[in-house]
Image (cartoon, rainbow, N blue to C red; front, side, top):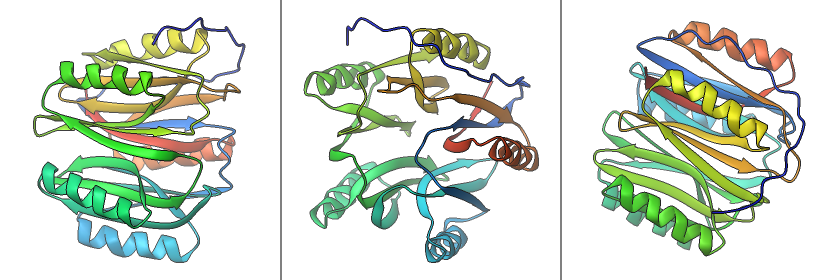
Amino acid sequence: MKKAVKTVLAVVLIPAIAVADDFWVGLFAKDTGYTDQSYTTSKSLSRLKTKIDNEWAKGYDLIDISYGHDVWMALYAKGTGYKQQAYMHRRDIRKFAEAVNAYAQKGFKLINVEYGAGEWVGIFAKGGKWTEPLFDYTRYRDDFEKNVIKRWREGYMLVDVEAAEGYWTGIFVKGTGFKSEAYVIVDEWEEVSPQIKAKWRDGYRLVNIEYTAGEWFLLFAEYPKPREELFANDEDIEDFRETIRKYWKQGYYLVDLADGRD
């Protein structure tokens, strides 16, 4: 997608990043519209279901799920605009896609996809500003990239990416308010920070960080109003919890989770 990029001055905080073999990554932002936030962790999907139900009962909405270090981590927020939610998991990508279509028939939009422990997991919602969601999956990265360009030309924006079991998947929607999008794929974690800083200077902000088939997929968008954001990583889940608490105190919300390797 070719577009003249308007340079916007914004205050951003860039934390020191300690490199580890396998680590959690968090994208934090202000001006998200969220009013409160929580997260839960669990060793199994069955136990995670109970925790999700508990957070729903407290009025939180499920916004992201990630798997790493044999742990499932679920992220929640208030102020999302969602009216009703659901989630499901399937071991086969084709059955997962069929379930996505079945939920769509009931008015649920797919807002997040994650793969872990042999399961494809989808988060669904009614309400919210996104419209006309599409779930696409392809066998090869080249085909996925061609599909991204195709969807952009059709007026869609990419909001989530996941690659596993030889498949590349993406959620495309309308109604994001983004002026334009861009993405960068790098092999090494040490390349991530320079790429993000360069895009920040160009007026873009991060939408999604994913560790995809041994590579880092960095998805950016030009927001109507640039938001203040930062990213951080920790190898240990307890350290990551402390990082989350630290940035919550500074007024940031955790908006995207990932787990990957250097």
